[in-house]
Every structure is written in C-alpha cells, then in structure tokens.
Length: 287
Image 1 (spheres, rainbow, N blue to C red):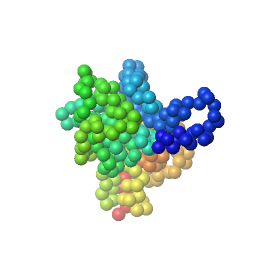
Image 2 (image 1 turned 180 degrees about the vertical axis):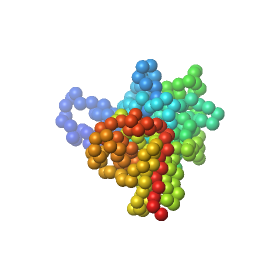
Image 3 (image 1 turned 120 degrees about the horizontal axis):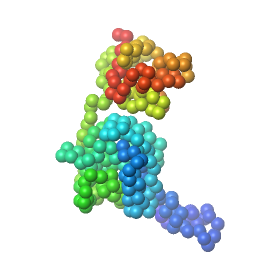
C-alpha cells in the first residue's frame, strides 16, 4: 500500500527536490486520537496526556472533544462521545478519562465498535455508548505495570492509543472479553402505552436532553396522541424547531441527536423550570 501511495504522490506532485515523499506519506497515514475527560483545564492532566501521545507516536493527531464533563458522570461522558465520534473518520481512537480508576470489577479495556476504537475503564460507560454489541473487547493486561495507578489515561490509555495509531494489533495488549459491564438504570423503559425516561444532559443553552429517542417514540406511539409529563408540566405537542414557540414558552423538540429535548424559548429550562440531571420524563399515549 505504501508503494502505491508513494507512486501516486510522485506522479501528482512536480519533481521538486525539496519534496519529501516520506513526509507526505506519513501525513496521509496520520491517526486521530480524541480525548474526553472530567479533568478541566486548570491542572496538568490534559497537557501530560497530550505530551505522552506526541512522544510515543509520530503519526497521531490529538483532538480534544471536551474536558468539562461533570465530575464522574458516565452518562454525560457517554452522551458527548456518542454524538461526537460518528463525525470522525473510521479508525479513530477515543480515550475516555472519566471515573477511570481501576477497581476489582472495573478493568481497563479497548473496545472496537462501529469502526472506531474506544479506550477506558469498563465501568458502564460503554454500555451507554454502544447501541449494539461491540465487534471486539480487549482487557488491557499486557502493558508494564505503571509506577503509580492513579492516572490510567496517562500510563495505560495513551500507551494503548499510540500502539493502535502505529498500526499495531490491539490484541497484543491483552486478552479478549465477551461482555462489558452494563448500567441499565440510564436507559429508557417502555410499555405498550408509555415511555419512561430521564434527563441525561444540559447543553450550553440549558436545554434539557433526555434519553428518549425519536425511534422509540415512533415505535411505541404509532402516530397516537400523547402527553409528556415532567416536573409539574404536561405538554401534548413536539415541535420541529425551537422557533415555533413564542418567547419564554416551553417547547419540546427532537434535536440533531434524535433525542427528546425540553427547552424554554430564549430562556433556561434548567433554571426556570427547575429541571435537573436524572429528573424523570414520562410519555403516555392514548390507548
């Protein structure tokens, strides 16, 4: 493959002596490693992990998704990554640095899913991220024991990500697993005439994003009339855009994520409606 790319590059570029075909070839092979964490930007953590990646791999491009996840919030981390990773090229590598301390029931893993690699702790975040069974799960067991065990994103995840970025087999780093730890309380529950969900995230506009998808809404609803209940509110219509509601009116929409959102037109649903993370949202359909 490298020979074919080199030939194509040489035929496409003018015969300038300053052209470094190896450098161009390396550029075309660059791997993307993303970082998602709850570290914030005050401490050295982000810079340390980026520096480790750059020191270990000459082909990696590091992209920050966010470092502002609410501390230890697996649901928020899964939400952000789930709706970000799909826009990256296949083969991208995603490090998840949230609640990643290793424990007796939470090992460090590489998960290959939907053409992407995800590296993090098997603490339930992958069960919220993956909509179906991953193609491959590898428990990271074959890396040298780090001197300190408090920062796995630096000593384990960065090393594993660079191993994959360099084109090496991720199975060299550990043993295959059959299952991931599952968090079931964060998933919507449905019956013949109802759906029960929760608020899982607030965006920067303070819109409340629930875990109820348009897919499950259409499957259960089948075009029937419905009522949506949350806090002391009851609504009977889902709009297509926020602007269909008047200023300060409550509006329900399915956003670009395909999830039901509760918004206050040009206002804060979080503050003015008193909504919070994990607050219940219920939809009832006419029988």
